[in-house]
Length: 471
Image (cartoon, rainbow, N blue to C red):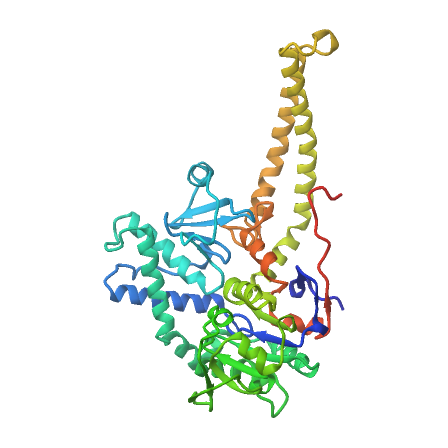
Protein backbone atom coordinates (compact mmCIF):
# COMPACT_ATOMS: atom_id res chain seq x y z
CA UNK A 1 0.00 0.00 0.00
CA UNK A 2 1.42 3.36 -1.05
CA UNK A 3 2.20 5.91 1.62
CA UNK A 4 -0.18 8.91 1.44
CA UNK A 5 1.54 12.04 0.15
CA UNK A 6 0.58 13.82 3.34
CA UNK A 7 2.65 11.28 5.30
CA UNK A 8 5.66 11.19 2.97
CA UNK A 9 9.25 12.05 3.83
CA UNK A 10 10.59 14.61 1.36
CA UNK A 11 14.27 14.76 0.56
CA UNK A 12 16.45 17.77 -0.27
CA UNK A 13 19.74 15.94 0.17
CA UNK A 14 20.07 12.17 -0.23
CA UNK A 15 20.00 10.40 3.13
CA UNK A 16 20.82 6.72 3.64
CA UNK A 17 19.22 5.81 6.97
CA UNK A 18 21.30 2.62 7.15
CA UNK A 19 24.38 4.82 7.57
CA UNK A 20 22.79 6.80 10.42
CA UNK A 21 23.94 5.39 13.76
CA UNK A 22 22.08 7.77 16.04
CA UNK A 23 18.91 9.87 15.84
CA UNK A 24 18.33 12.84 18.11
CA UNK A 25 14.87 14.28 18.70
CA UNK A 26 13.43 17.52 19.93
CA UNK A 27 10.26 17.08 22.00
CA UNK A 28 7.74 19.94 21.72
CA UNK A 29 5.97 19.97 18.35
CA UNK A 30 8.31 17.15 17.27
CA UNK A 31 7.87 13.97 19.30
CA UNK A 32 4.81 15.52 20.88
CA UNK A 33 2.38 17.52 18.82
CA UNK A 34 -0.02 19.92 20.46
CA UNK A 35 -3.41 21.18 19.41
CA UNK A 36 -2.03 24.41 18.00
CA UNK A 37 -5.22 26.42 18.42
CA UNK A 38 -5.52 25.42 22.09
CA UNK A 39 -1.86 25.79 23.07
CA UNK A 40 -1.28 29.09 21.29
CA UNK A 41 -4.52 30.59 22.57
CA UNK A 42 -3.50 29.85 26.15
CA UNK A 43 0.02 31.20 25.58
CA UNK A 44 -1.57 34.32 24.06
CA UNK A 45 -3.91 34.69 27.05
CA UNK A 46 -1.07 34.38 29.56
CA UNK A 47 0.93 37.01 27.69
CA UNK A 48 -2.17 39.18 27.55
CA UNK A 49 -2.61 38.86 31.32
CA UNK A 50 1.01 39.88 31.81
CA UNK A 51 0.48 43.04 29.75
CA UNK A 52 -2.78 43.89 31.51
CA UNK A 53 -1.02 43.55 34.87
CA UNK A 54 1.47 46.16 33.65
CA UNK A 55 -1.32 48.59 32.84
CA UNK A 56 -1.77 48.06 29.10
CA UNK A 57 -5.38 48.06 27.77
CA UNK A 58 -5.28 44.78 25.86
CA UNK A 59 -7.79 42.72 27.83
CA UNK A 60 -10.42 42.94 25.10
CA UNK A 61 -8.23 41.35 22.42
CA UNK A 62 -8.90 37.81 21.25
CA UNK A 63 -6.55 35.23 19.75
CA UNK A 64 -7.01 34.73 16.00
CA UNK A 65 -4.78 32.03 14.54
CA UNK A 66 -5.87 32.91 11.00
CA UNK A 67 -4.07 36.26 11.16
CA UNK A 68 -0.64 34.65 10.98
CA UNK A 69 1.25 31.56 9.87
CA UNK A 70 4.62 29.97 10.39
CA UNK A 71 7.30 31.12 7.97
CA UNK A 72 6.15 34.74 7.89
CA UNK A 73 8.47 37.53 9.02
CA UNK A 74 7.87 40.41 11.42
CA UNK A 75 9.21 43.80 10.37
CA UNK A 76 9.58 45.25 13.87
CA UNK A 77 10.74 48.60 12.50
CA UNK A 78 7.45 49.18 10.68
CA UNK A 79 4.96 47.11 12.69
CA UNK A 80 4.34 44.82 9.73
CA UNK A 81 4.03 41.11 9.06
CA UNK A 82 5.38 40.11 5.65
CA UNK A 83 5.69 37.11 3.38
CA UNK A 84 8.80 36.88 1.23
CA UNK A 85 9.85 34.67 -1.65
CA UNK A 86 13.04 32.60 -1.71
CA UNK A 87 15.08 35.61 -2.85
CA UNK A 88 13.96 37.76 0.08
CA UNK A 89 11.59 39.98 -1.90
CA UNK A 90 8.32 40.77 -0.14
CA UNK A 91 5.21 39.50 -1.90
CA UNK A 92 2.52 40.23 0.72
CA UNK A 93 2.34 42.28 3.90
CA UNK A 94 0.04 43.40 6.68
CA UNK A 95 0.41 46.46 8.86
CA UNK A 96 -0.91 45.36 12.23
CA UNK A 97 -3.84 43.23 11.14
CA UNK A 98 -4.61 45.14 7.91
CA UNK A 99 -3.40 43.55 4.68
CA UNK A 100 -1.61 46.05 2.46
CA UNK A 101 -2.98 46.53 -1.08
CA UNK A 102 -0.54 46.03 -3.92
CA UNK A 103 0.18 49.73 -4.51
CA UNK A 104 0.99 50.30 -0.84
CA UNK A 105 3.06 47.11 -0.73
CA UNK A 106 5.11 48.21 -3.74
CA UNK A 107 5.63 51.70 -2.30
CA UNK A 108 6.74 50.34 1.07
CA UNK A 109 8.83 47.34 0.01
CA UNK A 110 9.52 47.66 -3.71
CA UNK A 111 13.23 48.24 -3.05
CA UNK A 112 13.51 46.12 0.11
CA UNK A 113 15.37 42.83 0.37
CA UNK A 114 15.06 40.75 3.56
CA UNK A 115 18.26 39.70 5.29
CA UNK A 116 17.45 37.68 8.41
CA UNK A 117 20.78 38.70 9.95
CA UNK A 118 19.29 42.16 10.39
CA UNK A 119 17.43 42.33 13.76
CA UNK A 120 14.72 44.34 12.02
CA UNK A 121 13.37 41.04 10.71
CA UNK A 122 12.00 38.36 13.06
CA UNK A 123 11.40 35.03 11.31
CA UNK A 124 8.48 32.98 12.65
CA UNK A 125 10.41 29.73 12.85
CA UNK A 126 8.03 27.55 14.85
CA UNK A 127 4.39 27.14 15.77
CA UNK A 128 5.23 28.69 19.16
CA UNK A 129 5.58 32.01 17.29
CA UNK A 130 1.91 32.11 16.24
CA UNK A 131 0.68 33.65 19.51
CA UNK A 132 3.50 36.21 19.46
CA UNK A 133 2.75 37.44 15.94
CA UNK A 134 -1.01 37.56 16.55
CA UNK A 135 -0.69 39.66 19.71
CA UNK A 136 1.92 41.91 18.13
CA UNK A 137 -0.24 42.67 15.09
CA UNK A 138 -3.24 43.51 17.25
CA UNK A 139 -1.24 45.79 19.55
CA UNK A 140 0.21 47.58 16.52
CA UNK A 141 -3.39 48.52 15.68
CA UNK A 142 -3.86 49.85 19.23
CA UNK A 143 -0.62 51.83 19.05
CA UNK A 144 -1.61 53.39 15.73
CA UNK A 145 -5.00 54.36 17.16
CA UNK A 146 -3.36 56.10 20.12
CA UNK A 147 -4.88 53.62 22.55
CA UNK A 148 -1.61 52.17 23.82
CA UNK A 149 0.49 54.57 25.82
CA UNK A 150 4.03 53.61 26.77
CA UNK A 151 5.79 52.03 23.78
CA UNK A 152 7.56 54.69 21.73
CA UNK A 153 7.54 52.74 18.50
CA UNK A 154 7.01 49.39 16.83
CA UNK A 155 10.35 47.95 17.97
CA UNK A 156 9.71 48.81 21.62
CA UNK A 157 6.21 47.36 21.26
CA UNK A 158 7.65 44.12 19.91
CA UNK A 159 10.02 43.86 22.87
CA UNK A 160 7.10 44.45 25.23
CA UNK A 161 4.94 41.73 23.67
CA UNK A 162 7.91 39.36 23.47
CA UNK A 163 8.67 39.86 27.17
CA UNK A 164 5.05 39.16 28.08
CA UNK A 165 5.07 35.91 26.14
CA UNK A 166 8.48 34.86 27.47
CA UNK A 167 7.26 35.51 31.02
CA UNK A 168 4.32 33.16 30.44
CA UNK A 169 6.73 30.39 29.43
CA UNK A 170 9.36 31.11 32.09
CA UNK A 171 6.85 31.17 34.93
CA UNK A 172 5.73 27.70 33.91
CA UNK A 173 2.04 28.38 34.45
CA UNK A 174 1.04 27.13 31.04
CA UNK A 175 3.11 23.96 31.33
CA UNK A 176 1.68 23.23 34.77
CA UNK A 177 -1.78 23.55 33.26
CA UNK A 178 -0.86 21.12 30.48
CA UNK A 179 0.56 18.57 32.94
CA UNK A 180 -2.75 18.62 34.87
CA UNK A 181 -4.83 18.02 31.73
CA UNK A 182 -2.63 16.79 28.86
CA UNK A 183 -5.59 15.42 26.89
CA UNK A 184 -6.77 19.00 26.26
CA UNK A 185 -3.47 19.99 24.68
CA UNK A 186 -1.67 16.94 23.29
CA UNK A 187 -2.55 15.40 19.93
CA UNK A 188 -1.66 11.76 20.59
CA UNK A 189 -0.04 9.81 17.77
CA UNK A 190 0.70 6.16 18.50
CA UNK A 191 2.82 5.93 15.34
CA UNK A 192 5.54 8.06 16.95
CA UNK A 193 6.60 5.69 19.77
CA UNK A 194 6.23 2.75 17.38
CA UNK A 195 8.53 4.41 14.85
CA UNK A 196 11.15 5.03 17.53
CA UNK A 197 10.85 1.45 18.76
CA UNK A 198 11.55 0.24 15.22
CA UNK A 199 14.62 2.47 15.09
CA UNK A 200 15.82 1.21 18.46
CA UNK A 201 15.41 -2.43 17.45
CA UNK A 202 17.26 -1.69 14.21
CA UNK A 203 20.31 -0.70 16.26
CA UNK A 204 19.98 3.07 16.13
CA UNK A 205 21.03 5.01 19.22
CA UNK A 206 18.25 7.37 20.17
CA UNK A 207 18.63 10.74 21.91
CA UNK A 208 16.10 13.18 23.31
CA UNK A 209 17.46 16.74 23.33
CA UNK A 210 14.89 19.29 24.49
CA UNK A 211 14.82 22.76 25.98
CA UNK A 212 11.98 21.76 28.28
CA UNK A 213 12.50 21.09 31.98
CA UNK A 214 12.76 17.55 33.37
CA UNK A 215 9.43 17.52 35.21
CA UNK A 216 7.56 18.65 32.09
CA UNK A 217 9.50 16.35 29.76
CA UNK A 218 8.88 13.32 31.99
CA UNK A 219 5.16 14.07 32.32
CA UNK A 220 4.59 14.67 28.59
CA UNK A 221 6.64 11.73 27.37
CA UNK A 222 4.97 9.39 29.86
CA UNK A 223 1.55 10.51 28.66
CA UNK A 224 2.32 10.41 24.93
CA UNK A 225 4.55 7.30 24.76
CA UNK A 226 4.00 4.80 27.57
CA UNK A 227 0.46 3.65 26.60
CA UNK A 228 1.69 2.61 23.15
CA UNK A 229 4.86 0.75 24.12
CA UNK A 230 5.14 -2.98 24.92
CA UNK A 231 4.16 -3.97 28.44
CA UNK A 232 6.92 -3.19 30.90
CA UNK A 233 8.55 -0.61 28.61
CA UNK A 234 8.62 3.08 29.47
CA UNK A 235 9.53 6.00 27.25
CA UNK A 236 12.89 6.35 28.96
CA UNK A 237 13.85 2.83 27.82
CA UNK A 238 13.88 4.00 24.19
CA UNK A 239 16.63 6.58 24.62
CA UNK A 240 20.36 6.07 25.00
CA UNK A 241 20.67 9.57 26.37
CA UNK A 242 18.25 12.31 27.43
CA UNK A 243 19.20 15.99 27.66
CA UNK A 244 16.74 18.47 29.19
CA UNK A 245 17.07 22.26 29.37
CA UNK A 246 19.55 21.92 26.52
CA UNK A 247 19.51 25.66 25.78
CA UNK A 248 19.33 25.16 22.02
CA UNK A 249 20.73 26.70 19.87
CA UNK A 250 23.61 27.22 22.35
CA UNK A 251 23.71 23.44 22.87
CA UNK A 252 25.20 23.05 19.39
CA UNK A 253 27.77 25.87 19.59
CA UNK A 254 28.78 26.51 23.23
CA UNK A 255 31.19 23.87 24.55
CA UNK A 256 31.49 25.50 27.97
CA UNK A 257 28.00 24.74 29.29
CA UNK A 258 28.17 22.66 32.51
CA UNK A 259 26.50 19.27 32.69
CA UNK A 260 24.34 17.88 35.50
CA UNK A 261 22.88 14.42 35.88
CA UNK A 262 19.18 14.01 36.67
CA UNK A 263 19.33 11.26 39.30
CA UNK A 264 15.63 10.56 39.96
CA UNK A 265 12.10 11.22 38.73
CA UNK A 266 11.85 14.22 41.05
CA UNK A 267 14.57 15.92 39.02
CA UNK A 268 17.33 16.08 41.62
CA UNK A 269 20.71 16.94 40.12
CA UNK A 270 24.39 16.28 40.65
CA UNK A 271 27.28 17.79 38.71
CA UNK A 272 29.10 15.69 36.14
CA UNK A 273 32.83 15.81 35.48
CA UNK A 274 33.77 14.58 32.02
CA UNK A 275 31.44 13.21 29.34
CA UNK A 276 28.03 11.76 30.18
CA UNK A 277 27.49 8.03 30.24
CA UNK A 278 25.23 6.22 27.82
CA UNK A 279 21.84 5.57 29.36
CA UNK A 280 21.85 8.68 31.54
CA UNK A 281 19.54 11.65 31.85
CA UNK A 282 21.18 15.08 31.97
CA UNK A 283 20.61 18.79 32.14
CA UNK A 284 22.71 21.15 30.00
CA UNK A 285 25.96 20.12 28.33
CA UNK A 286 26.63 20.37 24.62
CA UNK A 287 26.56 18.33 21.42
CA UNK A 288 30.23 17.29 21.47
CA UNK A 289 29.76 15.67 24.90
CA UNK A 290 26.89 13.60 23.50
CA UNK A 291 29.01 12.47 20.55
CA UNK A 292 31.79 11.41 22.93
CA UNK A 293 29.41 9.55 25.23
CA UNK A 294 27.90 7.50 22.41
CA UNK A 295 31.01 7.16 20.26
CA UNK A 296 29.61 9.13 17.35
CA UNK A 297 30.97 11.30 14.55
CA UNK A 298 29.06 14.20 13.02
CA UNK A 299 27.69 12.46 9.92
CA UNK A 300 26.56 9.49 12.03
CA UNK A 301 23.79 11.60 13.56
CA UNK A 302 20.39 12.70 12.29
CA UNK A 303 18.69 15.40 14.35
CA UNK A 304 14.92 15.87 14.07
CA UNK A 305 13.14 19.04 15.19
CA UNK A 306 10.49 21.59 14.32
CA UNK A 307 12.47 24.83 14.75
CA UNK A 308 14.11 25.88 11.49
CA UNK A 309 16.89 27.75 13.32
CA UNK A 310 17.47 26.22 16.77
CA UNK A 311 17.01 22.60 15.64
CA UNK A 312 17.91 22.42 11.97
CA UNK A 313 20.05 25.37 10.90
CA UNK A 314 22.43 25.35 13.86
CA UNK A 315 22.83 21.58 14.18
CA UNK A 316 23.77 21.41 10.49
CA UNK A 317 26.06 24.44 10.35
CA UNK A 318 27.79 23.98 13.75
CA UNK A 319 28.20 20.23 14.32
CA UNK A 320 27.42 18.95 10.80
CA UNK A 321 24.68 16.58 11.92
CA UNK A 322 22.20 15.48 9.27
CA UNK A 323 18.85 17.18 9.72
CA UNK A 324 15.11 16.52 9.47
CA UNK A 325 12.45 19.20 9.90
CA UNK A 326 8.96 18.49 11.20
CA UNK A 327 6.50 20.69 9.35
CA UNK A 328 3.02 19.74 10.52
CA UNK A 329 1.33 22.25 8.20
CA UNK A 330 2.56 20.17 5.28
CA UNK A 331 -0.39 17.78 5.61
CA UNK A 332 -3.06 20.45 5.20
CA UNK A 333 -1.04 22.15 2.48
CA UNK A 334 -0.68 18.96 0.42
CA UNK A 335 -4.39 18.22 0.85
CA UNK A 336 -5.26 21.72 -0.36
CA UNK A 337 -2.89 21.43 -3.32
CA UNK A 338 -4.27 18.03 -4.29
CA UNK A 339 -7.84 19.36 -4.14
CA UNK A 340 -6.80 22.25 -6.40
CA UNK A 341 -4.87 20.03 -8.84
CA UNK A 342 -7.41 20.15 -11.69
CA UNK A 343 -7.72 23.92 -11.41
CA UNK A 344 -3.94 24.24 -11.25
CA UNK A 345 -3.60 22.31 -14.53
CA UNK A 346 -6.16 24.66 -16.09
CA UNK A 347 -4.29 27.67 -14.70
CA UNK A 348 -0.96 26.41 -16.05
CA UNK A 349 -2.43 25.79 -19.48
CA UNK A 350 -3.96 29.26 -19.60
CA UNK A 351 -0.68 30.85 -18.51
CA UNK A 352 1.22 28.94 -21.20
CA UNK A 353 -1.25 30.01 -23.92
CA UNK A 354 -1.12 33.59 -22.68
CA UNK A 355 2.69 33.56 -22.81
CA UNK A 356 2.60 32.64 -26.51
CA UNK A 357 0.38 35.62 -27.31
CA UNK A 358 2.53 37.93 -25.17
CA UNK A 359 5.55 36.94 -27.28
CA UNK A 360 3.57 37.76 -30.44
CA UNK A 361 2.61 41.19 -29.07
CA UNK A 362 6.22 41.91 -28.11
CA UNK A 363 7.39 41.03 -31.63
CA UNK A 364 4.68 43.19 -33.23
CA UNK A 365 5.72 46.14 -31.05
CA UNK A 366 9.33 45.65 -32.13
CA UNK A 367 8.27 45.57 -35.79
CA UNK A 368 6.30 48.79 -35.24
CA UNK A 369 9.23 50.44 -33.48
CA UNK A 370 11.64 49.55 -36.29
CA UNK A 371 9.24 50.74 -38.95
CA UNK A 372 8.68 54.10 -37.23
CA UNK A 373 12.46 54.53 -36.89
CA UNK A 374 12.89 53.99 -40.63
CA UNK A 375 14.77 50.73 -40.17
CA UNK A 376 12.22 48.76 -42.14
CA UNK A 377 10.48 50.20 -45.23
CA UNK A 378 6.70 50.01 -45.28
CA UNK A 379 6.90 48.26 -48.67
CA UNK A 380 8.62 45.27 -46.97
CA UNK A 381 5.78 44.69 -44.57
CA UNK A 382 2.46 45.94 -43.31
CA UNK A 383 1.71 49.56 -42.59
CA UNK A 384 1.89 50.87 -39.03
CA UNK A 385 -1.87 51.08 -38.75
CA UNK A 386 -2.20 47.39 -39.62
CA UNK A 387 0.35 46.37 -36.99
CA UNK A 388 -1.32 48.59 -34.38
CA UNK A 389 -4.68 46.99 -35.15
CA UNK A 390 -3.28 43.48 -34.71
CA UNK A 391 -1.65 44.50 -31.43
CA UNK A 392 -5.02 45.74 -30.14
CA UNK A 393 -6.70 42.52 -31.22
CA UNK A 394 -4.14 40.40 -29.37
CA UNK A 395 -4.35 42.65 -26.29
CA UNK A 396 -8.10 42.00 -26.24
CA UNK A 397 -7.36 38.26 -26.28
CA UNK A 398 -4.90 38.75 -23.40
CA UNK A 399 -7.60 40.54 -21.41
CA UNK A 400 -9.92 37.60 -21.93
CA UNK A 401 -7.19 35.28 -20.67
CA UNK A 402 -6.75 37.49 -17.60
CA UNK A 403 -10.46 37.26 -16.86
CA UNK A 404 -10.14 33.47 -16.68
CA UNK A 405 -6.74 33.43 -14.98
CA UNK A 406 -7.43 35.94 -12.19
CA UNK A 407 -10.03 33.95 -10.21
CA UNK A 408 -7.92 30.79 -10.43
CA UNK A 409 -4.80 32.65 -9.34
CA UNK A 410 -6.76 34.20 -6.48
CA UNK A 411 -7.92 30.76 -5.33
CA UNK A 412 -4.36 29.46 -5.49
CA UNK A 413 -3.05 32.39 -3.43
CA UNK A 414 -5.50 31.54 -0.65
CA UNK A 415 -4.82 27.82 -0.35
CA UNK A 416 -4.10 26.68 3.23
CA UNK A 417 -4.41 30.19 4.70
CA UNK A 418 -6.93 32.67 3.26
CA UNK A 419 -4.69 35.65 4.08
CA UNK A 420 -1.23 34.31 3.32
CA UNK A 421 -1.63 31.26 1.11
CA UNK A 422 0.59 28.14 1.24
CA UNK A 423 3.47 28.05 3.73
CA UNK A 424 5.91 26.82 1.09
CA UNK A 425 4.85 29.15 -1.73
CA UNK A 426 4.92 32.90 -2.37
CA UNK A 427 2.83 33.23 -5.50
CA UNK A 428 4.24 30.80 -8.07
CA UNK A 429 7.70 30.91 -6.45
CA UNK A 430 9.06 29.19 -3.37
CA UNK A 431 8.53 31.09 -0.14
CA UNK A 432 11.33 32.26 2.13
CA UNK A 433 10.28 29.44 4.47
CA UNK A 434 10.69 26.92 1.66
CA UNK A 435 14.16 28.31 0.96
CA UNK A 436 15.16 27.83 4.60
CA UNK A 437 13.83 24.27 4.52
CA UNK A 438 15.63 23.55 1.26
CA UNK A 439 18.91 24.96 2.53
CA UNK A 440 19.08 23.46 6.02
CA UNK A 441 16.82 20.39 6.21
CA UNK A 442 18.17 17.27 4.53
CA UNK A 443 14.66 15.85 4.75
CA UNK A 444 11.33 17.20 5.92
CA UNK A 445 8.03 15.60 6.82
CA UNK A 446 4.79 16.39 8.61
CA UNK A 447 5.34 14.23 11.70
CA UNK A 448 7.81 11.82 13.28
CA UNK A 449 5.29 9.01 12.92
CA UNK A 450 5.88 9.08 9.16
CA UNK A 451 9.18 7.26 9.75
CA UNK A 452 7.04 4.24 10.61
CA UNK A 453 6.06 4.05 6.92
CA UNK A 454 9.64 4.47 5.73
CA UNK A 455 11.42 1.85 7.94
CA UNK A 456 14.71 2.54 9.80
CA UNK A 457 16.86 1.49 6.84
CA UNK A 458 15.22 3.47 4.04
CA UNK A 459 17.35 5.13 1.38
CA UNK A 460 15.89 8.60 0.87
CA UNK A 461 16.96 9.98 -2.51
CA UNK A 462 16.61 13.60 -3.48
CA UNK A 463 14.95 14.19 -6.86
CA UNK A 464 16.84 15.71 -9.76
CA UNK A 465 16.91 19.45 -9.22
CA UNK A 466 14.91 21.32 -11.83
CA UNK A 467 16.29 24.34 -13.63
CA UNK A 468 14.31 26.94 -15.59
CA UNK A 469 15.72 25.64 -18.88
CA UNK A 470 14.79 21.99 -18.19
CA UNK A 471 12.24 20.62 -20.62
